[in-house]
Each structure stands twice: as C-alpha cells, then as structure tokens.
Length: 161
Image (tube, rainbow, N blue to C red):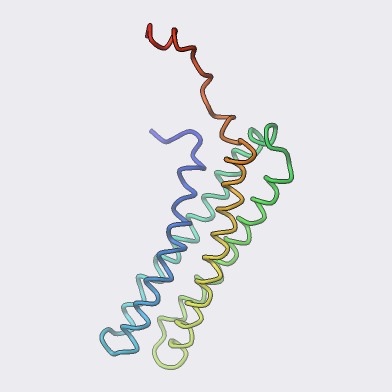
C-alpha cells in the first residue's frame, strides 16, 4: 500500500540522489584520471543522474496533487516559492543529466563532460538544498502537515480503545 500523501515519501529520493551523484561522479573522475578504471565506470553516474531526473519529476507531480489541499492552510506564496524551487531543481537535474552523458565519451571531450558534470552536480545540490528548505518551511513553519494529521483523541477515549 502506498503512503497517502505520496509526496513526502517521494521527495527524499531526489534529495538523496543530489548528494550521492556528485560523490560518485568525483570518485569516478579520480578512478578514470588515475587509470584505475576505464570510462565505463562513468555509466552508473549517468544512470543515477537519470534516476535523479525521474524522481525529481515524480516529486513535482505528486506535489501538484497536494497543492490544492495544502493551499487552504498555507496560502499561495509559500507554495509558489516551493514549486518554483522544485522546477529549478528539475531543470538543473536535466542539464546535469545531459552533461553526464558526454562523460561517456573517450578522450578530451569525455574528460570535459565529466568535470562539467561535477560542476553541474554542485548546482543541483544547491538547488536541492533550496527546494528542501522551502518544503521544510511549508511543513514546520506554515504547518502544512496539519492538513493530513488525524484529529487528536481525548486521552480517556484513547485508553478505552
């Protein structure tokens, strides 16, 4: 059974990948430059980057499903800020994904693509921090989670059950 709402469960995947992918990319760059591995070691970076793009898109889609319900409690401005940050994060993820594919090339162009992917990974991570921060504000400052909380039962009623 899927959690309801799904958005809070999904959003952690792109954030975790935004941290993980640059670390893996750095390790792969070092392994390729030292001659320890061939450029084939770059393939997991590209695949995880694609997973980052897909999970970012899914997070946006599930967030849009929740927007109307939360909007009554939070208001438009904080939700709009979070949505804009999420769209920037997705755009950065797509750009980093395209760059990461060039890292599969051999020679100078592949090396340039791998280094560019590292730089793009830092931008994606910064975008992830931004979208995560604005999402956290929705929950912890604007009390968006209250919409999904079950009504509190009085202590006496809870003990009888």
